[in-house]
Image (cartoon, rainbow, N blue to C red; front, side, top):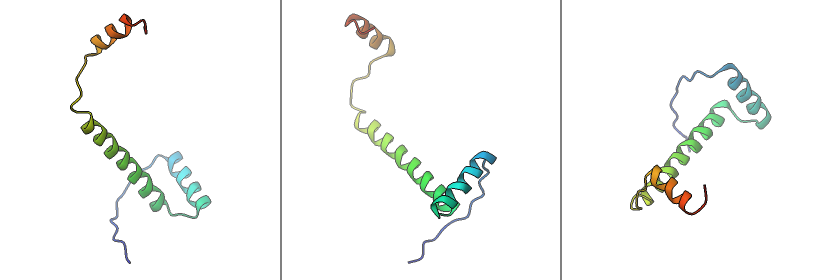
Length: 77
């Protein structure tokens, strides 16, 4: 099965590029594979965060000031 890919130009800081090259050599993986995995993991984490926000959208909202008062009232601050 052939996987279609798209080409993109990405500019990396020299130190980051060097670290990626070293990881590529140490893991016998291409820079593209490493970057693709990192981006995929980052997007999956964002999706998880959005899902959590969605699940909690029905919860009551409390202001920062009210939360501080509540913590002080219970001796937590």
